Image (tube, rainbow, N blue to C red; front, side, top):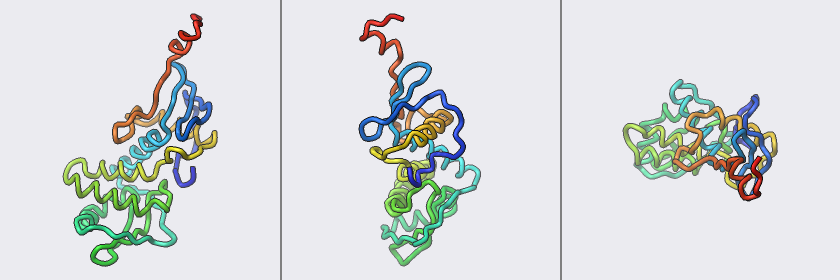
Length: 200
């Protein structure tokens, strides 16, 4: 999960990873049954919560880009960038003006793969421009989390699966991603036993 930042020190999880199926689902065993997890939605929720905490504390964690990336943006997005520079820095996104319609990205959140920086900046600034006022920074954090999260279809090794499950279990509002998509589906043990006529 290169650049994905699925959390260092792994604690014990109630969910035990059992593998990855199709292009983006984790299978885990829990006390109540079998759990299918959408890895992108789950990681997006974990990162979104992490970004909101940085926004509250004012302690962004950035990864400077070795080669700053220029991105062309519309004038209203330049205005949004100027208005929210400090808050975006708390989320880990740093940039400077680079002409009348361009920005140069100098740093991104530590979890974001550098190759996703330009798309992330455009979507984040668009979220700010479209949602002025209350809730705008939450929308920006959701856009950054989406671009930083593991993608649906990425292959995760067992240690990465385990870290993601631990992080998800400790996350607030963990049943959905920031956009409202479910992160998991529980198939209870009794629902598995019934079709196989196992009543014990």
